[in-house]
Structure formats: structure tokens, C-alpha cells
Image (cartoon, rainbow, N blue to C red; front, side):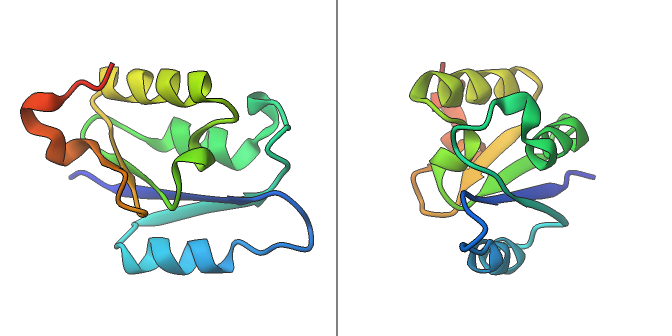
Length: 110
């Protein structure tokens, strides 16, 4: 059965992922991983992002509040979307910019 895995991130200790986590819960995520880590932190040191990506299986959906939670640069984001689509994983951005499951004939993105 396909799952929806949520990922939330904020950049500083003074910020909170609470609002993102609440949005992800309301969206129906089965599991939510979150962390406080700078957007400048290398991808391999984003432990919860790596855990979320490793958890995903074909048919699952990665759900995030905003596209920039998915990568540090546009190149990273596009590459991540491409990799996920190649693995048969959907991506849903809660701000409404993207839901690859609903793209139908428009998929794949890249």
C-alpha cells in the first residue's frame, strides 16, 4: 500500500517545524520526519531528509510544505524530482506548486 512520507525542515534553532508538521499531518502523512538544519548544510548531513528518502518505495509520495525543502539549489531540486520519479515515487508540495501524481500525461517532469 502506498504511503505518504512527510519531511519538514527549518534552518535555525530559533525556528520551529511545528507549523510544517501540522500541515503534513493535516495532509494525511503516514510518517513525518523533521529537522533543524541550515539550508547550507550538505545533503549528506541532512539526516532526516536522508531517512525520508531511504524510506520511500515505489508508489509512495514524498510530501513537503515548500519546494525548497527538497534541495539547496534548483539543480538539486530538479535532480531529486527526477530521481524520485525514476523510482516511481510521487512528490506533493503543499503550497500547491506540484503534485506529480496528478500530472498524468505530463509526467515525467524531467
